[in-house]
Image (tube, rainbow over all chains, first blue to last red; front, side, top):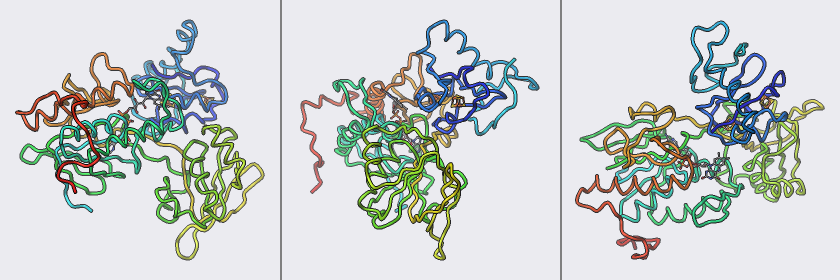
Length: 105
Length: 335
Ligand SMILES: Cc1cc2nc3c(=O)[nH]c(=O)nc-3n(C[C@H](O)[C@H](O)[C@H](O)COP(=O)(O)OP(=O)(O)OC[C@H]3O[C@@H](n4cnc5c(N)ncnc54)[C@H](O)[C@@H]3O)c2cc1C
Ligand code: SF4
Ligand code: SF4
């Protein structure tokens, strides 16, 4: 399930995807966006509008690419980000959390 | 119309699961009310992809979202439901063991059972950035009455199906039609886009609404559009912002049902952890759950028939085969 954002987004961040996401599950990090794997409903709207092909359905990637891009996307939520004590987990909405200026190391 | 309502079943959420549940309730002779936060029926299908072809509805090799909603609505109306559109179910209380749900508009519904078919949560239209406070003064998120556009200068904002549908509906009726979209690509159905482009409507891409201006009567009379070559002012008495929706479980989270993330945990009767409260469709969670419309239909039938046995323990769980009966659009006793 779910869509992910790949490193094709790095330093692009035009945020079209965030404007379309109906469940507000695209989070802004320091250099790129990340999709919350538990909050995404897989509607595909972000992929339709991303000008860089960075938002993609995980299940449509070939297994090797999925093995790279899935964990890289999810790390934003599962790893402890620089300057924090605990992983973000499920913040329940990107606008609730606001943009962060860090990425998972 | 804030008189309290009393029904056998209150359906919260008018997506495919809720609409089919409404039919099932009517088939069993239950009185039913349907509540949805949106002013229109159809849930995700109507709000997000009316023009897409759906290929996995049993018995229908291909059906557009719009046609599916139309069919479901026709079927649901045989139950003669009380429609409470534009109402978000806010609180749940129990009076002598009977659930009482109150909407954000102050409507109370006393229901022998409640069925939550809330999908991904209550939909709210995305606001027009920087232009809040103009609602009711010419700015709206839906067109519920096309006559309201007659002889007006109409500005539609957005690039999806709803934006293009409303722009097209306004052409020939409104004095002028302008469609403004932030990007230069459109998400809407190609054929509708072509019709609008070929019409007298002005389509402005890479354009945002910078400001709205009101006349002395406090109603919108013009809008500033910011495009690539600066800002220009156009006449507009009606502004329709069709920028999509956001959904949130919101108030349902406070009802006290056992949740599983953003979903409601149910058992094989589609019963939630609260007495007389059932759930069906995308919103439910149990091991092996698959979130598809087809699954929601099955859950809706299970939920309604199990609810019926709670309302009347003497009644059969099995509703009978529909082929044994003529379901007419009027019920016995109606004249
Ligand atoms: C782009 C896209 C394409 C899809 N394609 C397919 C497909 O091809 N096949 C398929 O099977 N599925 C598809 N789906 C999924 C399908 O749309 C959902 O499974 C289906 O809509 C779920 O129906 P539902 O009735 O459970 O909920 P929804 O359709 O989500 O409807 C829920 C309704 O409940 C209302 N609501 C929620 N909370 C409240 C409240 N507190 N008060 C009042 N109202 C409330 C909401 O406003 C909403 O209208 C797709 C989804 C998307 C977004
Ligand atoms: S639209 Fe694409 S490139 Fe832009 S922020 Fe979203 S994922 Fe990144
Ligand atoms: S697939 Fe839909 S829900 Fe998931 S991130 Fe993209 S826009 Fe949001």
